[in-house]
Image (cartoon, rainbow, N blue to C red; front, side, top):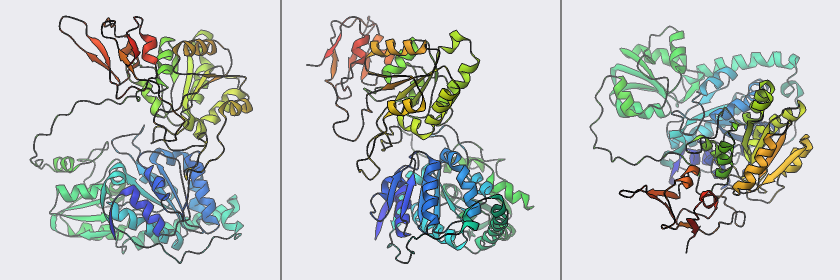
Length: 584
């Protein structure tokens, strides 16, 4: 049976066919859809974790008792999971464990462009890299065989293009030979005290050497000999670009990018006149090939930044780009918060109060964009609160009052709660605003511990944010309606004056929340044309439902798109001329 699947869908299918019993993740583009698709298979227990470290630890626990487990995350999530990952390399596994890492060249939805192949090398674990959806499925299954045969976790690296592109995939059946999980004690292997860990380090080094030799005969590493004037070593999506841009070139296609099959590389190099490495981001393969004494050209012609395309590869090799028809010029579409987003009023208020906003990762990061322009820093998940603590430590009392940390509900539970504990413990004097979406909004409205439902859509306990903050030791906790600008200004300004930690929690959910009854839209608004003076006050919140209609000889007037407006009422509060009313 064949289906057209995205890379993420194919990985989920591969996990099912491989006999995976536990799948755990924290959502993050471009990896999110993997776990959303494992829910299609009742044999797999799929769950969202509070963060990537916890997700990996869940997978490790399942592996240690003999179950095959799948853990998925985006590239920056591996930073969070690195602590258990490096020690897992020493302990090895019982049931196979696969960690999917989805990189994001070109930063389509990320704060950096790190190359996670370096983690495989650093942690000394094997990494596979598929080049299409069929390989996503096959490599996922192969990863469990490698994991159990070599007693190691395995990483599988995708990129945005592989994760989201679709191609034809041949489906198989779920294996029936995977052993049932059971408790089995092996403290010398799984308790990483120094005495045990020292011996395991030798195992890790021997394993990498063995895998490098085995890689030379693995079918996923293959030579494609054509014109021998040019030989290209490549992997993943870059392989597809090379085949399109340089169809006559000989290619060494690597399916396992760590450890590299050095003997196979030497053999390939001996068969071509000029050797190149084509890879996105770091010179990961190139540097290792040069280190074994083989001359190769790579980053001299291929950029260290951004994605590759067939056109960019052709240009790097001095070839003319293929003739294409003139692309239709589309209007610009800058990122923006949704119409009626409950965070728009908060950021508008913070700008009016001249707050120094320590921001965080989420769709609310768009508070940085004009016309709101109300975010001053954003580094990584959960950093807003710790950074606010640090800033408040060194500023004068008057400057300190301006410091406000803004963080979403899922991000707060991910790693922000640690920062708040530190702020309270060390008597930090800053204001924290928790934007409670009741959902993990940015990555596609996934459930989280504050939403009241699991990934499998089962009702569960929902975190009570005021009670959690109180338990941490916050004395000043207030809840506000973020759509009421007067209330926002009053409460936020009062808390900014406090010489100690305070927390403000917004009480309106994401307007796109999936569950019925959680969000109730208001009545759409409309502009009374005769009352509109063209003052543009309503444009200051940047709502995409509000259009500006220029007119000859006049300032122009505002217009509200009834298909976009959900009646949040924020714009009406800004209009001093009562020109915005409920639509008739």
